Length: 369
Image (tube, rainbow, N blue to C red; front, side, top):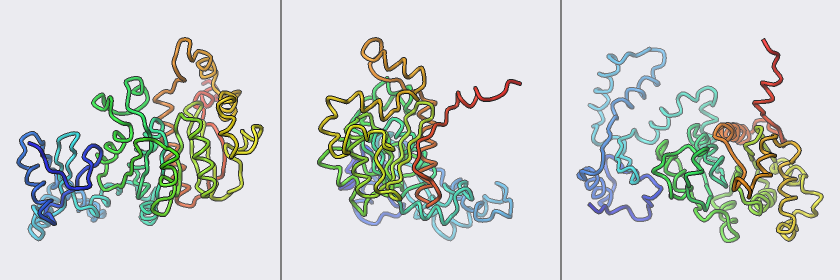
């Protein structure tokens, strides 16, 4: 069956949210088509979600499953089940899923955040706009941010498609091979929380879209930069600096984390001053091609790299095609990136800094025993 999707939606990467009681003829028709399509799997665990909602709203009562069942039945006696909440269609999975209404869904899904994230902090985070450039480490940051619901809008930029060699560090399934990484991450976030707003830039960051990426709809509150392109790394920082937007970057080696608070220090040099020897920031593009390796090594602070990464660098073009990254480092970097992003967005004290969370060094520094 060929489905008639709602105008303006893109089922390649967006979940389609349909009220259980549709608002217009277009929604009525699509929901009917989906429910009647034998290829579409229907998943309805609404009663279990409602039981959770009731339970978290009565934390002192210690309600058992036997006590919750009649309370769920009573709720739907007062508010008909077939008219409550919504259905969410995931085209790439051919699945139609029944969910609580948005407000109730968000309450249940974030209930285990409290009080590590307070209700007031959760509401503040829901107003924030975060940009993520590069979706290897960036995928881990984006998914961690989505799980904690640390944004109201996420802009993700990557021109690349998923390849098999990416899957040593990108947590996804083989069914995404050949799919644009931006589509992949948008899908994965929608599967966690279809109510989160995700805007994709599937062509990556270009001269044509960089202003829109940074400045549209009131502008970004924070940038997570994790791309492989050196020109984009430099250009995005210069742009962030001009707009006083803080930048976070993880480098997936020795737990290296960069935090640049251009919001607090709009005059600070990009990359903590590691590129000052190459001249003015706005002139770096002119010498980038001829001094590419020198600039890259300065950003990475070559002497501080792990011995295995240094050795790997020497093998590029000989026995390997590019530098290695491991899932353990990428996942850790994603968690750290999301953690410091949340702290910055909540106005907690996070200074501009480059530091290492080196797990091997931690073990090496422990006494035997």
